[in-house]
Image (tube, rainbow, N blue to C red; front, side, top):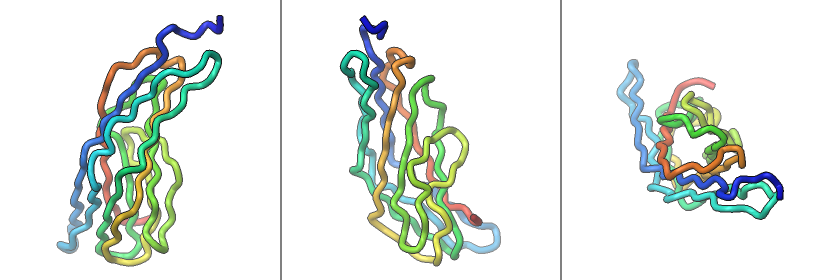
Length: 156
């Protein structure tokens, strides 16, 4: 016996479509991040005795970002905290010339997911990877949902 609970954590996170428009006060140029849709449920099931839980991933969604000036970046945050022992991370493919921050574990605080985009324009069909992980210490987690909020901001 490994001391693991009979019912391992099960988490479900639904990430609905999110569209935000940021309009700087100094000009009326639209900046936006448009997500292609809901990646669906991320469901962590069971694991073999003594083995860690396998994370659930989704790579079916893409995004389009429109920037009004060079040097803008994309930040992301959750609309509510994740349950204890459960994490949601994302990785965005960056537009040409910009840098992805790699896999970023999300919280309710804005975090840079794509660094300075080198020029104004629209960049489309860029991949988003969602990854849901849970520690065995999380216990049983009932179905829950979170929204990921993406925003285009100025500065590095």
